[in-house]
Length: 435
Image (tube, rainbow, N blue to C red; front, side, top):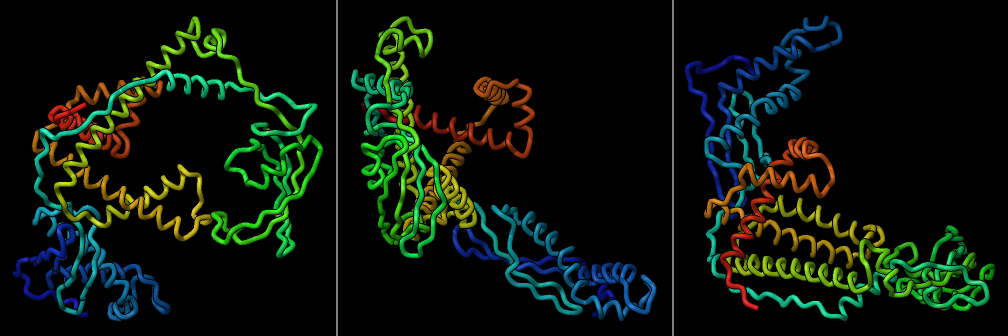
């Protein structure tokens, strides 16, 4: 490539042409003028000539044509890396375009004594018209807490307060807490499985049926064999389709003892003078929980009714990113490992995660646009109150919360979440709620 700069008085121009591929996806042609390319080429070549180490020449003393020949690809890539990002950014700024993620260069032509020609693809947030979002009719569920609900909560408290006492004169029975050692052997390959020492709640539905059956009547020190023929589609791929012979040895057996419902029982859960005062507090908490569920239901009904009335494309890159995050959350919440899932189970998780991602992104865009139209904003006073609330909930000094929120866009994310909540409150205030 020649280093001579031609047309010195020529104005430097970056040409562009934007093509809409869909509501979100764009394709753009960008070119960098020959004058700018030649100027950058000369600068880059001089840099390489001053730093190149070529056998037979001292550093920076090799003939420039030799440097040009030996480092041709490196020089070309350096020029592209130096010029392309700025050219793309300048064109996007001039066109007032803000991609949701950085553009991707899909085609690039770079010839000697020619301008750089390239195509870029990127996604933008979709344009859409808001449907009617006021006076939306929704139904509120009745907030009724029955005596049966209170009794169930009391029973849950009893279960959490249960004590397990060693069993001496009888064998294990349902609901006993057993410490056992389990050994397994694959009858097909004759390979031994790792020995496990584990606690087992006898009769629990998550246990292998054969294990529950084997443990009934066993006493500490006793052992028993049982077989499990696993189905080919078993969720644990290491066991799927295998016939395993297990040996279980009972180390200890403890029986569950529930506390009596009494005034003394109530006093163990706080400043309650008797069982009736505990029941009243439980009823109050259940009522508050049901009210929150009812409010959440109203919010979801309103957003869904608005969302169902409008349809638009979503940036696929953002959908994919949100989907990946949702998949990780699902697997984490279910305490499952992808390697132990069947293809069908994983496909179902991916489908659910993608659907959730699309709904979340769509609702976010709708609420943001409503906030803009209604001029809903978060004031400094509201932000300060949110900081105080977070400090109280997390039991940390207010200054620590502020320091944390001023890092890595956390403050903007918090304000955005507050804005969405405030917009939902606006929609609820303007809805028709029926019992």
